[in-house]
Length: 80
Image 1 (cartoon, rainbow, N blue to C red):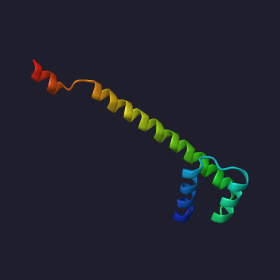
Image 2: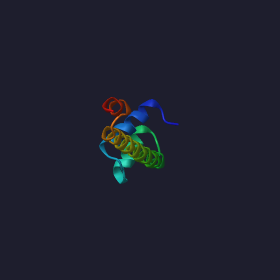
Image 3: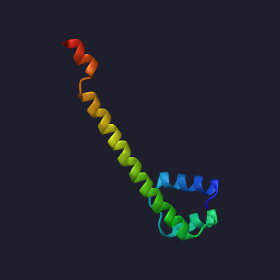
């Protein structure tokens, strides 16, 4: 389990850099009193979550664009 401060710092680092390796990962782990493996796994999981969010956003944007391209049923009824 991560505490709130650790999660906030991990999220801040993820915003800056989606992959943390080597010395930077070791420094972050030491600063947060975590193991390097905990930090590595957290970043792996966070990247997966980020990719899923990106796919959902793209699908939502595509659906919205498609709905704008189709005429609404109320406007087509008033034309007839």
